[in-house]
Amino acid sequence: MISLYELEEKYKDTLESIEEWVYLRIALGHQLKNNDKNQISKQTSKFNKLLKNIKILKNIFYGFRNWFRKYDYICFSDSAERRLINGIYKDKIMDDVIDRLNNVLLVELPNSQHYKNIYTKFKVSQSLLNMVIFIYKKISSHNEVKNKDIDNILIKEDIDFVYKNIIVNTQFEIKIYKMLFSMYKPKVIFINCAYCRCGVVKAARNAGIDVIELQHGVITKAHYGYISSIKLNNSYLPTKLLSFGFNEYTMKNLLIKKVIPIGSYYLNYLENNFIIDRELLSKISSYKYIVGVSLQDADWEFDGMLSFIKNVALKDKNILYIIIPRKRRDGIKLFDNIMLYDKLDCYNLILHCNIHVTLYSSCVLEAPTLGIPNIMIDINKFATKYYNDILDKYHTKIVDSEDSFIIAIPEMADLDKNTIKLKNDKVFVTDYERRINNFIKLIFNKKEAKCKK
Image (cartoon, rainbow, N blue to C red):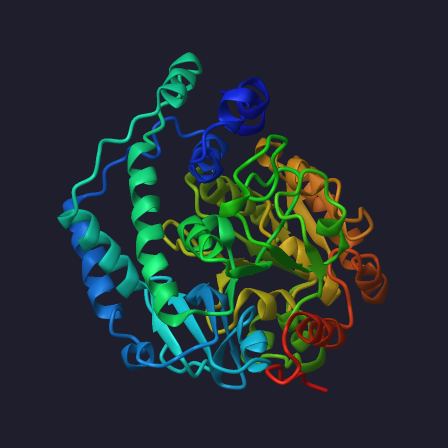
């Protein structure tokens, strides 16, 4: 099947003339990446829809009273970004920036649900806005969406991609967020994933509001959320990107043109505050090597990785594998040397390991900054496609067989931690405090900013 980038090169002139392509390409790119011909049109069961609606109703009143205040800044993030720090759940991307400004509202999308014991003072649930959008769409009349150019391309390439609802949903998102921003009149919008919230970005840009994205994961030449060789409507794109490092700063065809490397608050915190978990240590201390395995959720990713780990685990019982799920847990089978440990997040788990292993999780970017090397399993060549050009081969090895994986473990586990960190300094720049303070001072009124020393 044709890739998204091949499709854009082939139909460049046509696609550049379609305003909606800037966000339709995200959904189509995900479908093509996972090689799921009919992914977008799959129907959710009535029971699952009911469960989803119950969760939404449960979440809509989260932080409800915080809607009735005046704010200068609005942040958009999700609960998956929260990490347990000193007994309280803190958003590893947004909360440090929120601390440096006055009058900030966090709009949080729940990853199934919101945490109870959280750091952020003024927070509300995006579930309420999603419910408003859903109701508004139901009671409003709207024309049937049809684009002959898109339809012709899909027919020629034999792609079953249902895009009409995506356009309608985005149009109604823009309308609701336009009303939200006209009420609060924020000076700046911060967002953790712009391509996940194109309606938010468009509404803000239409209102003349600066939109700043804080990098949340990997950005490479293979990431269609950030890279395209064709011209796209930039009113759906952030005005600035606060990046982890200089790789994004120099990247060709990056859609966001203004890039400011600042590093990572959470990695900076972990480097200075890591504490060994004694309970976990007692479970792993008898093994020669400890390997942390980050999973992804698509079927081929999830099943392929678990099958691979099961096979290599049987070959050497002196190696322990700690499975680190993303969301899915169904089908994870534990053995003597395959375990789960849910009391720590992925980063703290990786710090207890000799090696981090994954298909293409963005944790491969962060692990070397913490002194932990990577081994990547090159199923469907995704590791090579995403990371071969940005990660140093000293600390990251890509393998394509069980035997080469077993051979790589002792040689990677013996690498010098300080050298690993130094060779990752372009992926994650150091001196986070100085960089974020300088950004706040340059962009915002000094009287409004509370720069930490």
